[in-house]
Image (tube, rainbow, N blue to C red; front, top):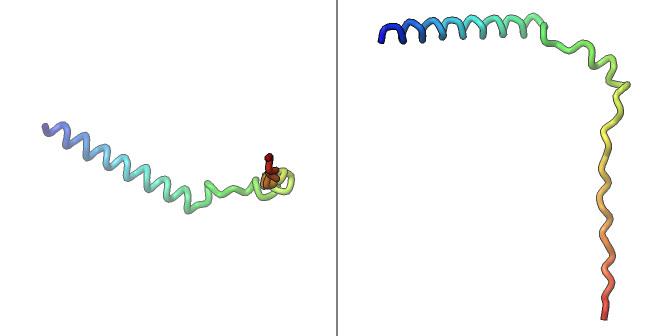
Length: 61
């Protein structure tokens, strides 16, 4: 039973270390996208779907 407590505490410590490394990487700007804004004008605009026109129903007698 004591092995479970040891493994659990080690896994929590490792998870905290990875979380701290992730926060440090985000704060240092590693995940900032500096490429996409320069080529955004080359992307085509999204296609705009037209609203379907209301159909004219004729009365049949």
